[in-house]
Image 1 (tube, rainbow, N blue to C red):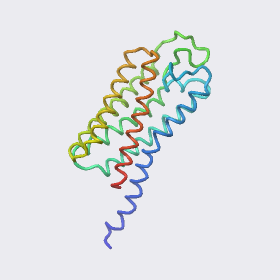
Image 2 (cartoon, rainbow, N blue to C red; image 1 turned 90 degrees about the horizontal axis):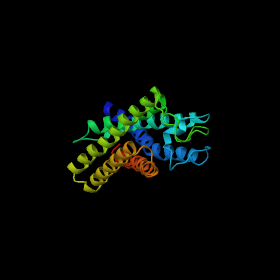
Image 3 (cartoon, rainbow, N blue to C red; image 1 turned 180 degrees about the horizontal axis):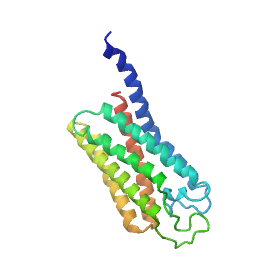
Length: 218
């Protein structure tokens, strides 16, 4: 047995762990988000994006949710870098990592209170602070990474003849882009908030599917 043989098992275990983290990141994030959405006073998931949950006394829960999801996403990006070969093998993990960085930045720069949340905030309150601008930049970095990552991964799977996963990746990227653009232009209307919430779930589902697929190569 050579030295390389001895190191391969350890490398595989580490990579599988990173990709497993990518699989559980989304369900964990969504569970914590929805658990708060239906228990926090004055929070309405049809009117308030998840980011607003970082405000108020229990706001640390959503902040921790961002941090954990961000770290797991960055870890997943490392795992994808180790397993993905061929077209898109450089940029796909970088873009997934950018999504993770965006989540970490969202924890550092919480969203401003607004639309009546937290309790006691005027319903028409919409001021943007420095931290609020930072949160917008964080979202732009993270969501751009996710959208572009979907398209790069789509190109990779198309290049190896796996058209179903390629189309799935393309559709996820397009739907997420539409929801994010709608949220930015819709000024927080109910339809755009709901659409964006659904898009977030779709995005996490795609990350889990990608990590599960790549885990077979680890």
